[in-house]
Image (cartoon, rainbow, N blue to C red; front, side, top):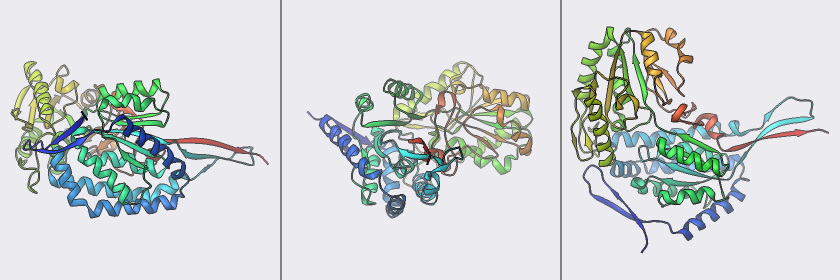
Length: 454
């Protein structure tokens, strides 16, 4: 009997689609096609690749409404956020249309040689293992620079967004990319080890959990293949005594509650100096209470369910274990199916799950500290390293603290977010390597030294 995978709407539990998993022979066919396509795709002129990128942007724009609804149906994202995600993918494509040729041109290096330079050659077939929380953006920020650099891609997407994965492949095909440039693998995680061992696969990119990252890093090391890991986060939001709460409170709430809190770079630990603590708590609570829960397909919905019921159960357990250690519930901590009420916890200490672990949902852990120094020290007390945000009127003083934060990002008076123009990635157990910007385009290339004497 052939194996299948099913997708469900997390908001109402309705079955969406049933998909046949690729057989072993079908996976082999896709690998072979990728290998054959790479031999011709790597020789495409950059201007020809950019024409296809423009076509891709047009395809995404023309299908924006349909793609947004598909995303909302499969993982429960409010429709306004789904639409924004699709629009961000178009901005990403446009960025690389404008900059790819410059990023990939040879770097001339003056030496004793007649001519010496660094050339950037594609590696070949790159395997991408992607998560469900941003089912289009996560894939596009990998695929667009990787393919434009001359590689081909295989996508193993999260099973609960299989429809999105198939739709993405169709976008590339309809844009005119050669068949085999971008292929979706409809398979389970059991096939990944064999894929990693195949000589056709030259590198791997994973966005996912720490557990998945450790496994992929192990397989990549075992097979001596480059890897890029973007893993979990436990970002701190430092609120100093001179922070302008009226100006920045909407940003702080969005930093935690966007995508129903299901973001690796969300503000998960709010570290608030005691001078401003009571004012922060009052205003933060008011804003969170105003979030509109409802059907994610409705335009006025700002908070919806989580992508699966088991995710809500895990979040509930993390919160309850923290309550057992002394945390106080200021708001929330009720669950119904996949819905978990936006929750604010106070009296949070460093031994609690909501401080130590990544909480993937709408839970804000608030920690009161006595001073600015204690705030920065507390923020750095984490095994994660994706990003830190600081809210203060004295941005120049905050700038002097940049080197104290080991994370991959440091944002002052704004939420940590990804931007095509800036490199994105983490440190410590949040992973390694960088996506986006020039670094993302050069993530899977051979930086080749060329030395010519006459």
